[in-house]
Length: 267
Length: 313
Image 1 (cartoon, rainbow over the protein chains, first blue to last red):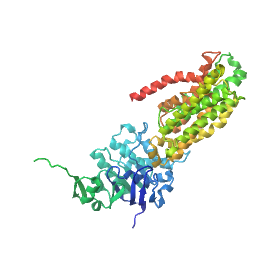
Image 2: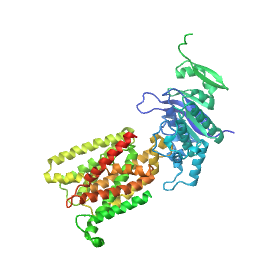
Image 3: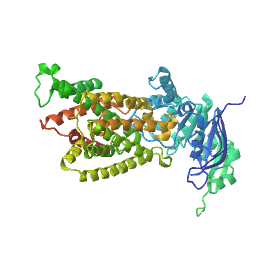
Image 4: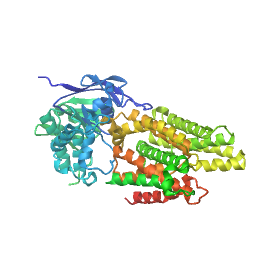
């Protein structure tokens, strides 16, 4: 059975006004329900632009971006927020708030203009908290959370939107090893357990290779490789894209990249 | 409980505004006194409505430019209104409505100019552009105002100067009625924007991902808050600090959600300005102070305290 196509980019090219070159050039991507995709690439390779184009914030100059068969730019923000939950890379610190109130913000696209919060909204919030293993954090103040807990709460807020696609822009930046692993495990579990589609931008090549079904490697806005981690992460490609000598070794059937030192230590 | 106290404070302030004054009205005559019905009550109600409008407008603009030190007059409105008023006074435009209308036109022109500047080059009402545009338009209007005032005669000058500091001595039931007809539309627009304004606190991009139409939201909130301020300035002059302090007081007591902030800012702003106006017309009776002086004298220490809290935390 073919899984439903949630996000489709075909030949997308984007250029910001005044920029000397295209931020994105000829990028294609198909994300289906129950698939975990990772987007890899050095700084400035167009990863965040890809997300903006996919979500209709940047209109492609060439090519198409479609979400569930409809052009991304044709969705209203409200309707789109019911289908796609996003963890943006940056957001301003919200005013003092309890965790549950923060997660409730994810219900905004379901609330009517004058109506209050309904039982269905509260139930969705509790489900999201449980799914992110954060039910015991619900009554805490936001500012008492650790970095890892905070990311789990933001993920819960995105889940409260009851989306079919999760988009995560470097969700593990500045997290320690345990919290980073927990977040990858959590996203993988949501994809497998709830049939969500996930698109994660990350700098963690090795974790992406181990958790994601498919990876898209970007270099200066162009696709340098797309497919299963084993097909994409070859030594030649990785060295070219990351501009550093590497060695690739398999681990549990997935490629792992080890950056090489330029000068060997003296014996 | 906090809401009950607020309602009690509002009623008590309005009662005090009606009972206190240079003319001694015995308590048992209050209901029949023309001084109360024709002077004090409309004046107190108008002060309450204007204070409420400034409080709500302050909440909205602080959320819009995402800067806690924003004030409804920051975006060039006071400069534009002042210019309009001075033009009306210097050229001796006839009729009782000439001055408020000229001030309104000045404020709305300044608003339109800043709004246009805020859209240049796809800036989409970028807060930084709005703030700089507001300062620039305000300075431009102030320069023209000063040029006119420097050529005017002494008595005219005094009138213009006093008007700029605000006051309710011209209050009547007609002015109250004008505000009552005018204010509900911008207030309703802001009330409808309460939830998305909560999201905007996260930033523009996160707010869009949570389903807010940020582009439309910013335009509507900017226009509604500015039109509300323009009406306030037209009937009462430039009254500073209400729109700056009231939002902060309300956030301290009622939290940051705009569904609670808008109604409480209206009540707190109204109470504060009605009280300030009562002070303005009683402390140096039978003369009176411009109410803007009272709000500044009360507001600056509160503001300094808030600044301290900010830098400490």
